Image (cartoon, rainbow, N blue to C red; front, side):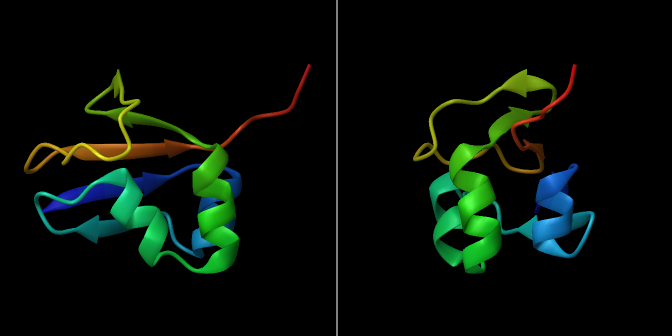
Length: 76
């Protein structure tokens, strides 16, 4: 299983801090299956797979990995 960890606005949109995906899933599949509010956040988010930037939304994620969902942050 793939562990999905949501941060900041993604956590609020998901209504949870974590979720699980079956091995072999992709970020595109996560986005397609998400509720509209979360899908909107996912479309603008950055992703880390086991701490490394993941840019290919269509590539299957590694089995057993941790996917961190980082929405755009505002601040200063």
